[in-house]
Image 1: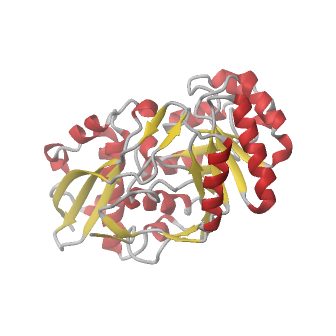
Image 2: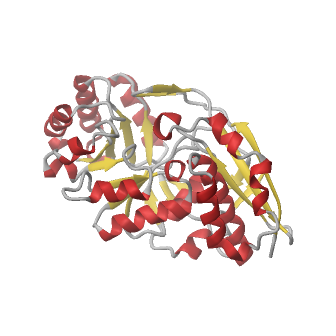
Length: 355
C-alpha cells in the first residue's frame, strides 16, 4: 500500500495557564503537524513542537524542514517498508528532531492504522496505565499550594514542581507541599539545570525525609562529569533530561559511574518513537528506569509518547501533561485520562481523529 499524499501545517493551540520555568515563561503553544494519506484513504497524523533552548531547533526551523517539497520523498513509497521509511526520516533531518518526530509519529500512526491495531499493541504493550504528574511552574509558596490543591481535586495523584531559581524557596515549597498533603500526593521536582553540584547535594539532604520520587536535571546539560561526581544516593533519584537527547547521549550517561538512574525521554528531543525506543533499550540493558516527558504538545504527540512508554517494561514514571492546558487542538480522542491515570485506547494507530 503506497503513500499518496503528505501535507504539513502549523497551528497555535493556545495556553490557558501560562507558566514560568528556570529559563523562560511559556504563554503560547505553536505546533507543527504532518498528515500522511495512503492510496486507500487511511490517514496518519504527527505533531512537533521543539524546545530551542534544549535542542537548538527553533519553531521556524521545524516548519522550514516540514515544507511539503521536503516530504515528497515519501510519496509513492510502500508503507510496508515502514522501518526503512523511519530510517530515511532520521537520515534526512539530522538537525531537526521535532520535525523528525512529526513525520515519524505520522508514519507510526498510519502504518498501525493500516494494520488495524493500536500503536502500543504493535510495539508490544507491557503497561496498562500509570499516573501522570501535572506540572507546577516556578511560583511562590502560596500559589504553589493553591495549584497543587486544584490538581488534587481533579484527581491527580502526582505533581511535578519546577525549581532552580532560589534554593531556599525551593526547599520551602517542597516542605510545605508535603506538610499540607502528607502522603496523599507524589512529588517530583525539576530544577531545569538551575543548580550547581553543591546545591544539588544540599537540596537532596534537606529534602531527604520528604519522599521525593525524583530530581530532574538539576545540573547544566553538558556537565556530565559533575553529574557522575554526585554521591551515588543522589544519582539514584536523578533523572537526566536535557543531558539526554540521542541514543549516543544515553551511552555516555551510562558509562561508569552512571550519571543518573533515570532517563527522561521526550519524542521532541530524540526525534520520534523510533529513536525513543533505542534509548529505552539502552536504558533497560543497564537497569535504568524511564521517565517519559513532553513539551507543550498536541494530543497527537502526547498520545504517541504514551504508546511508546507503555511498550517499555522499564517505564516507571510519566509526565505527559503537555496537552492538558491547551485552549484548542486539531484532533480529539487519543489517550484516556481518568483520576490522574493515563491509558491507551483500543483504537487503531494513535486513536485520534481530526476535528
